[in-house]
Length: 344
Length: 252
Image (cartoon, rainbow over all chains, first blue to last red; front, side, top):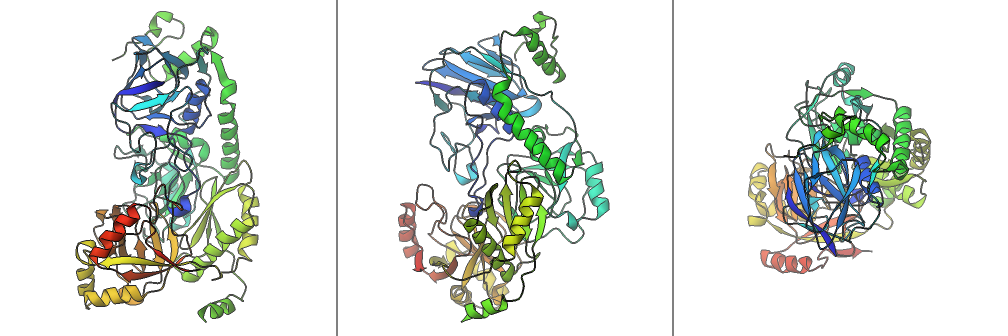
């Protein structure tokens, strides 16, 4: 049996999948990947079910070593400098570690979370149909907690399939779209306008439960205590200090602060990827528009297997490298000599 | 019977709930803006009726004090169409007491297991024994389960025991804590933060992995408490850890 051994890893890194919906009525939150599209892209690269369990890697670097045989991985999400035994590896592509080789990943660039999927999946014991880590509830497998050095992710030996890359839509810095509600009537129109018209930053104290926003103070019409009601991933609640908190996949299933708005499904992963301290804006859309975008997002996610390409297809690879360039990497799409990026 | 009185009250037409968008994949069906037992009964009635007469596209429902959160897949059904279906069911979802389960939950009060009992008694100008007697005498209902797995919020706390929450919430309170806060009492399953006043602890696990059922209580279940001593608590705690319910199902 092959396994991938965690040789080094930073905080906020855990096994995540599509989550465990269905028990929110008992207070159990679904958890699951912060950026589902990137999770699905990583899985598509190695032929897995799109929302199978993969390693969600937080902003810091990480390294993994193959033991007991070769291991094929798919890398997607926030790009990083990456190499296997000094051999550069591109994001949005698959790569294989021979027995004993180490995959080194640098800091996340232009995002917060990367996804490392393993061909044949990660072995574990599903709880409520999911391996996703929810540390507070003691759930997750193979470890019910964030990953640590020395952890082992068991899998099967890599197949002889050719390596793949995946063509994803170009990254965008467009505002994060929201629909107002369910408690936007707890706020005066000028405060709703302030929420939409202002620049926001994500606080460094954010985590998988909630992203705390820093910006102007949003005032309530009638106090900040409401009777607790149900939350969704993407709920934007406003506590007493007027600094909104966006609820993330490990949120509480209920909450007692007014919720001014909700991030739309299609933009949630893009929101989750915004780095702490980087300014962004919200944009209000109608329910019809949000649902049309949700349907498009669903279609995009399920189209990922059709977006796989051979790694040797140079013409299209230049496009992938141009994307890498947008993310701030000093790579020339036309000068092959610059592709071999040094890894810290 | 109280039940009959309730049914007669419900004979008047049911006012429609408000449909509030919670993003593109959930609707908050709001019956009241306050903690209101009648509204909570309508929430639970609608929840039951949706379970009995499913609507294609609904992925799960989450009852809370005053609203039912309906999660759905917008690929299968849109906000307007789902809203119509929900309103049609809300108009005929009558609260009913039939089939209500009743649990008796053992609690050891005070001492190290209920560190706020003395202070609560002082604040309410009575004795700890009186607080315990009043809490045990209550007839409660699971109004909602939320925040963390198994955290059961109960309605039915007598007015005398209503108290504002602590100014400084505790960051860590023990598993199995039985507490009061505002006009509610609660059964907490996992250790975690809480701003409520801690009266005691139960060995009952309302959530326990690898036990069938994993979740013991359902929204709408009736609850009474029974006082046990610390020694019994320790014995029952071991039994519960091994998978016993410890809570006693009184009816049905």
